Length: 208
Image (cartoon, rainbow, N blue to C red):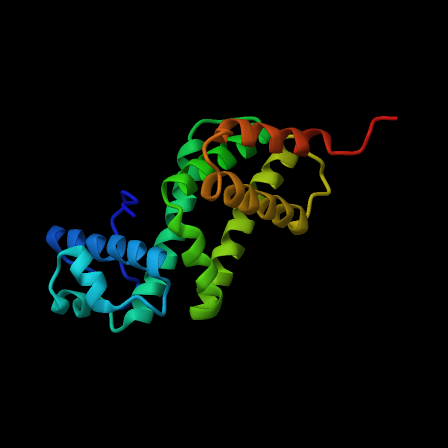
């Protein structure tokens, strides 16, 4: 999964110091994403990752101590990539509801291009529970901050709480599963995001 970012493993003393090292680390993470996404954590091997990356086995141990270590780094890397996709879609000032629509559309496009993200994040619940929880907690916190900003601007209700942000996140996750991972492209991301945005704007109770 080429996320277009400079990767770091997050382990003290193992950050690459040269451009060549950064490219090697990026290759390892991208290969790990493909291997874990196709085979799952338990069936993936370090030799399979290095073969796919086209790197020597010694290069792996330059940056990671184990299969678990690269999996942990990969979860962080994917979480950062999801955040960056949303951030790039929100580069310009936007009304509060439009921010949510664009953020969801960007996530759906990202998930369609990187379907392996779902399997890897799901496996993290059992392989690396701390990273799994951190992924969702930081995502929920970003949504909550957007909602609070909308409230400060007078565009959203002033009583929005963390549970509202997590409800939106849950909706987004399952829309991604249905239409980005399982979907056949029949409903484009912008259409899915527009329907979800209408739900946020109007709710589902019938007008009386």
